[in-house]
Image 1 (cartoon, rainbow, N blue to C red):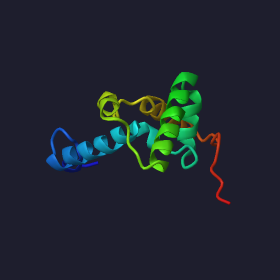
Image 2 (cartoon, rainbow, N blue to C red):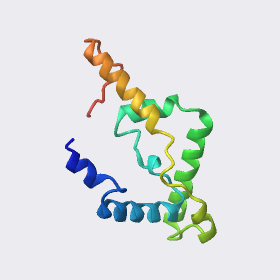
Image 3 (spheres, helix red, strand yellow):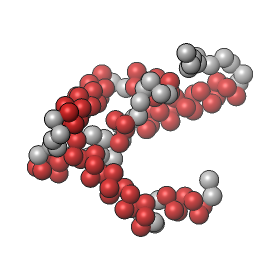
Image 4 (tube, one colour):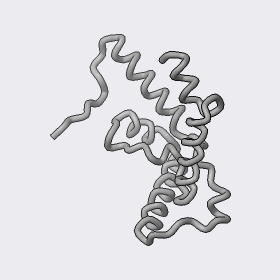
Amino acid sequence: MSSFLQSFLDPKKSWLAAMHMKSVTKRLRKYGLRYDDLYDPYYDQDIKEALNRLPREIVDARNQRLKRAIDLSMKHEYLPENLQKMQTPFRSYLQEMLALVKKENAEREALGALPLYQRTIP
């Protein structure tokens, strides 16, 4: 990726990226979600594998956040203000494991081995 594009997407350097990050943070806090909660394990097999490798407590906490967000959305409500302030939407728990899974898959592909899993489209 070009350095111009990287600087444009970096919230520390671009006011537009910072404004977008602030907007996303505000929306995630309303429901008590983290950014990593938005990744869908049914869409990407790497995400599913990364979630399977995480400790059970982290996956359970993710599922609780998702259930709470769905419940709040169905009730057309938001978290109380005091709980919204406690939320950390960009504290990552999935990115390191996802990077490791993608690295292993790239290494496996470079060595010519068959992939462990393939997504089948019905």
